[in-house]
Length: 323
Image (cartoon, rainbow, N blue to C red):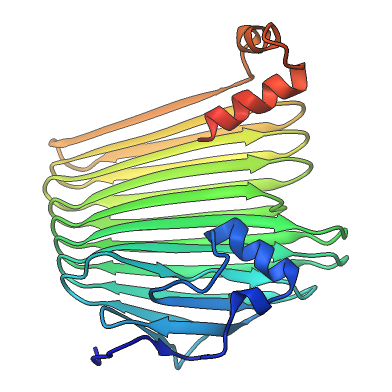
C-alpha cells in the first residue's frame, strides 16, 4: 500500500452538505453521515462514486473488470472506520456493485455500509450489492449494514445484498444488519467459511409491512478446529407481508454453531423458519432455536395501564424487540 501523508481524495470538492436534501437524508439514515467522515470512505450515488478518501492504513481502489471497489486494510491497523454507503435517488435505476475487502493480519476495523433508496416513480429501483470479506488471521472486523427505502410513488424499492466471508485462523467478524423500513423486496444471502479458531457473530433485524417480502439465507461452513458461529435473526412482519428465514450450519470439525429466529407476526403476515444443522464431525455442537408468535396480550395490557393506546403500546414493544 502506498504511503500517504494525508487522505487521498478522489473528488476533493465533495461535500455532503451540498447534496440535495433527499441524498443527505438517505446518508444520515443508513450511515449516520451528516458531514464528510475523517477516515477512509467511498460514497456511491446513482451508480457512480461521488466522493472517496484513502488513508495510510486503508486504500480504496476502483475495480477494473466490473463495477465496485477493492478495499485494502493494512496488517495491524487499529482505530479505523471505513464508510461505503450507497444511495439511489434517480427513478428506475438498476445498480449492481461488487466490493471486496482484504483485511490484513491482526487488523481491527469497523466498516459501515448500507443502501438507501428514494423512489417517487412508478418503476422499480434496485440495488444488488455483492460484498466479499477476506479476513486475515487474528483480525477483528465489525460490519454494519443498514437498508432503508422511501418515496411517494408506486414503484418498488428492491435490495439484494450478498455477503461472502472467509475468516482466517483465530479471526473474528461481527455482522450487524438492519432493514429499517421501506424495502419492498429483498433476498439477503450470506455465505461463510471459518478456519481454525475463527468466530462469526451475526445479528439481523428486519421489519416488513404492506405487501413486502423478505428472504434471508445463511450458510456457514464451520471447517476449522475450534471455530464458532452465532446467527440471530429478529423480525417483525405486519399487514400482508411475508418473511422467510433459512439457516444452514455445517459442523465439519470440532466447533460450536447456534442459529436463532425470533419473530413477531401481526395482522395477515406470514413468517416461516427453515433451520438446517448438519454435524459432519462427532465433535461438532450445533443448536437451532425458533420462536414465532404475536405480541403477548399481558404486555399490551401492562403498557396500556400506563396510559398508552394499544397502537402506542405495540410500537413500544416492537422498538424494544428490535433493539
